[in-house]
Image (cartoon, rainbow, N blue to C red; front, side, top):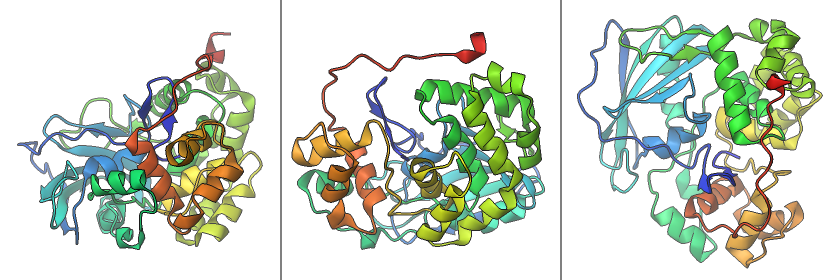
Length: 344
């Protein structure tokens, strides 16, 4: 899930949080368009945008030493680059009170679209007040992170493709494949003073035309690559899911062979900001939730759903807060074997 626990590093990843330094002096606008947005509450950029980073070295996401978050997107209007810096109390660390906000500069054909959707990206459509903690651990984790907002990108394929790459492999394998494919088939990010190596992911047509040998070199098996190709061929229909409610959106995504509840939930957590999109079918999450809330490290999906029933409507947020608390069962099995079919 967004914030899924990585058993290899024993840390919360994919939304756990990315470190964002205190804002400093950065590059000028360089011809980019700018927007300032003020949140109605604390805003932690690292927690809010963290789920969008696909591991270290993600070519579509970068945190600069000056505290700026750089993100690229393939918008309906074309490629765009966003540079976002936090402003106001409660920004960056999530420990402040009062309102926060951000200043964003955008470049590229999709700059206007990116700035128009900036508030949703920073959690404006999220309603943290709808959440009530029912367990002491969840309450403590929630209290320590007032700046956590659920991002909503409005872009389905952007989240779906890296999620498919993460099916049934280690995080490192999936991140390596994402980096290789985006750098090889994407395009350099538009804009001035853009960090070196920042790229926009390929368009749907390009994903559909990647030859089998390049999938293989990236370490992606035929099942996952075929799922991505099928999704890319109906990309316009899948993008419509960003405007649907959670059940309808999940149904739309899962109509594509190879996309099940795990993949649809992981995608909609980001594209739709779905607070109730709980990830089921995950290898580790049920045991982590079970151990944190009931001391049951062997909990399955059914037990997890029962434990999180009091959080109906907010189960994704509750699970994410549990992961952020870091209360995980001690390891008792060997690490998952890391394979690389690209070397075969």
